[in-house]
Figure 1 (tube, rainbow, N blue to C red):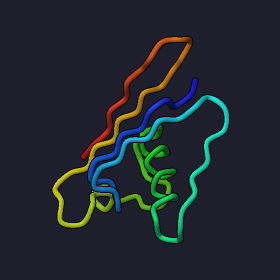
Figure 2 (tube, helix red, strand yellow):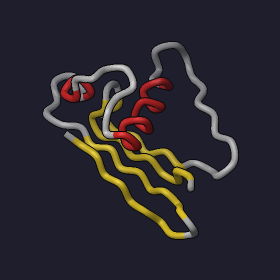
Figure 3 (spheres, rainbow, N blue to C red):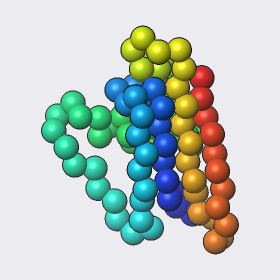
Length: 87
């Protein structure tokens, strides 16, 4: 099983983002404070319904917004599973 696609809306410092992954190796590269760790936390949140860093769900919402939404498309046994998580 692997994550094919990740969509974020109002999650931490991301207003909107859509990423596609390959089944082998994927790397996040960017300057300090660009949001690399927030992407990893989004994957963690989508997988376990909680942040790795902060137990308060409402603090995952982008500043001055009312909600966040995460969506992942996972490939499992050659079938696509779509998972949603939001607050």
